Length: 365
Image (cartoon, rainbow, N blue to C red; front, top):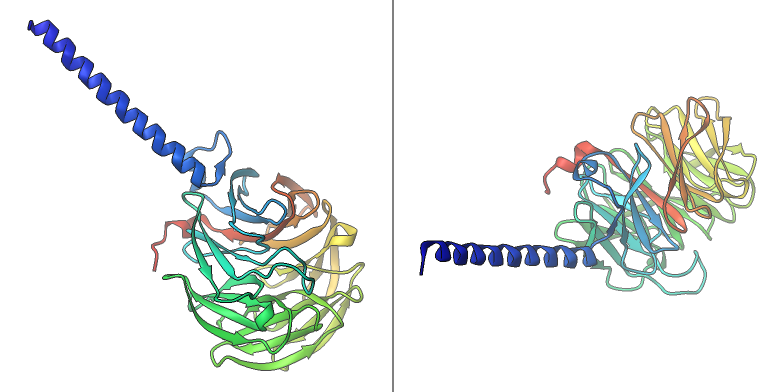
């Protein structure tokens, strides 16, 4: 064999190995693409190292992962059930947690969900399913501000299920004392929880540490959504029988005042500086902004059809509003009192969560 012929054979062998290696790499990539969420074209790796906005799309049964700066949808991930309404982002910013509620509205017949699904925000894929043990219709999910546990409302069992996120295990159950405990808010020190009990028309004030209902506060025949002020002084819930907002004094667990609104309120979210409260109005396709000092509406901003939930950017400049019917999220600029951007997401856009870029670099606990 001549040296030249031997070199040609060696080169041919290296070429075959290289081609085989590339084939394996492409096959692995194809399998990963099938099991993970769909990435939008043109999204670079560097685009992932920034703030994220998470949007649950009830109609599509997906989670949209959005870059709020550009308004681009980075990926859509199947949530893995029928269907998720709300989402919570883990404190380290690495995972999203979606309770699977069922296929009906509150109090209506339908399937009764019993799981919480976990989505990895790096690989855009569902990585775990937590079974609550029985049908519960899990809905609202919030990470405790001090203990890092996940608190999930469970309507059918009149309780809040407590999950240890690592190792994905239900570790406790806290009674709410009322049916249809749909939404939850937690005080900044993590000791008090408040649930909006939709069909009961009440709010439960709960000692989370001692697993004790402190008060059941009558509001109306039907209520919706709930939020707590940044100083923990007030809890807000929207009356569904008339256009007004109930303001609860957390020291006495009684209704302090009722704020008149132009139309029925729904989602509520306070600014981080404690000065204002934003309220969605699905029937009038608008968002009103309440001054929490005067308890009067100071702004009304029109948005696309069926606004649902609100999340406010940490600098309090922008409010993001999910708009169910229009498949969009509206980014409202508080200074200009106008929509700054509209993001295309999925059908039935509802639950929202914010993931700061700085948190995504943290380590798992």
